[in-house]
Image (cartoon, rainbow over all chains, first blue to last red; front, top):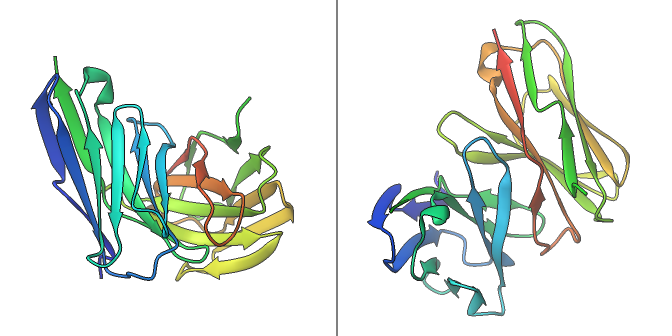
Length: 110
Length: 113
């Protein structure tokens, strides 16, 4: 059973475009929702963490939202750049237990 | 200064061997984890320790045994390695066991021949 689902699996956009990555989860009783970035052959870098009591978090060109009732989170990237190319993973946290989606592989073309 | 460090980064070994991967965090966190990322890039939790105490132990073969000598270290020992154990293993830590932000190591790529 896939607890965390990310759509699309891959996305290719031209530089400068705004884009949205989607994450859905089956367990609405979450503690937090975290978005990560993973570059090829590298570990995961935390981008944004949304606690269950929050609706969204922003960092620079990134904005993440959380809707617990519908079991969804989105990561909005504004004015995309080639350096944003990476795999983006979301993870839902529930009492010491983080469950990950399979990720969205983003390619931003110059 | 690396917050979560794993060694070795690459490990190539024969089936049947026993190997270990070490993890250390210098963030002062209470909770540490081991995750396995398979060939499809899917991350799955294996173990979680809070203050050296095992909290989560997913359905992992008992050939895998975590050991936490202190809060800052969580090592992973694997006995009788099998081909299917080939994956990237990530160590992570969080400040609290219930709702902390996760910080990951760079990963250890294990290849079993």
